[in-house]
Length: 109
Image (cartoon, rainbow, N blue to C red):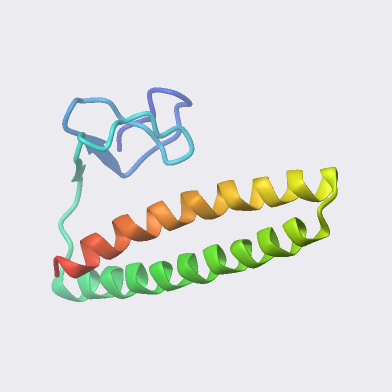
């Protein structure tokens, strides 16, 4: 297995550019498509797909929860609660963007 060029961890994928990064160091751009280093059986691919569908559902729930917390903190209208609301909003935006990418992939099935 290849090693991450940033931290040295063993990873299970490579990218077309030849760079290899673990998920925590992910420096590859979105245009660099991961190339699996192993073949999946139909059963394994089905399990992976089901896991991705479940992950998308969890991401949706997390984003909605963060939006609720954001709303609660904004309603308090203090400087500390505004900071908390902004953190929750920032995290929700990241999750919503990830969910949009997941949904785009899932719709292409």
